[in-house]
Length: 297
Image (cartoon, rainbow, N blue to C red; front, side, top):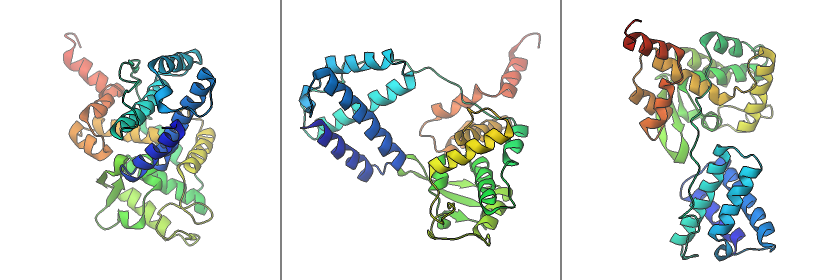
């Protein structure tokens, strides 16, 4: 089977069977197309079939990524996309052999997530001009991000019926279409409820909670753009992203004594291992461990 056709069928499969997000679908398409372009150049041929893609081609591809200075995370992501495609191709009996079976993945470097101290959170939240409609929206969004540790795609995907004002609960559709309920702080409830009843709110999309200036659902890319603006005016590091707020509240929960299992459920992590990284992030927790274990502390 032609690689392009296999790629398109695979992407359709993860969209329909797994409920993959638009962001995930875009990433798979980009990574697989990048590999296809490299392979066509490597083999000096257009329109490759899956059977032509040998272990040698995959190894050359990995060498090419390293030569171009790709990070370990990028290499792992692109390799994972290929693995997923060929596993699906084997299942569908499009190929007999999987060239990825004997390919070793590089070891991932464990990078600790960036977190903000509370005064930095307050500084960031003070940046939107809440006397304007869009500034009010952005502040409500920040409050909800910090309240409930949402991913960017989760917050832009929220619908009105997901927001339970009276019970202070939020229904969130996470990765892999996994649903969870998370609590909301009284402060965040107040901001979101007020935003939903803002006199300047123009609803072209009556379902979405967060709307752009034209009344349609806000996109993650648009949130990133606004966030970058607020970071610039606040003087905070440009490496901070909306996802940093998720890491920040998870760390603050841990510092205040919340157990890891509860944090795992609130974050929607599939395994506890992903949540334990926050025990390595907090200077306060490190200090507590040091004081408890050092014989002369």
